[in-house]
Amino acid sequence: MTETLKKELITTAQVKDILESVKPDDMDQIQRWTFDYTTKFGKVTGKQAQKMVKKLVEECDLTPEESVEVVNVMPTSLEELRAFTFGWKKLILTETLEKMLAILKDESQG
Image (cartoon, rainbow, N blue to C red; front, side):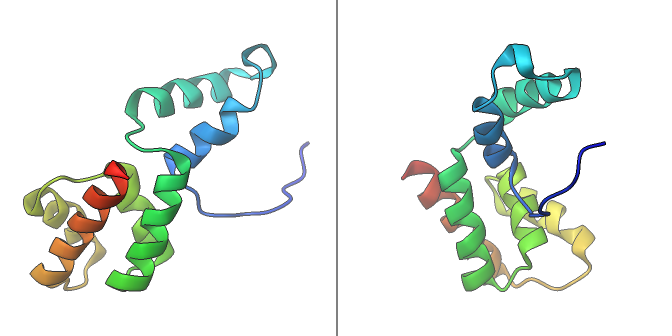
């Protein structure tokens, strides 16, 4: 059994970066499926995702877990973001939601 060295929250974009360092022939079936998923649905690079998570935590008062969720989904409208954050059961002001969208948009274009 493999030993867990470290637990860390990472985005799907960061997972893709990690799996890109593994030869396809050395991947097990789950790693190949995961790599395929991250390749198809990834919208930003690992570095961009990491920046977004950091900014969302610092500037929008989100938890790291919430920030990773938002970056993985990359909502593009207030309605999408509201629907997504509704499950968090905390009030997020429209101003904060707009700031979150701006961070996602700015960093994904950077």
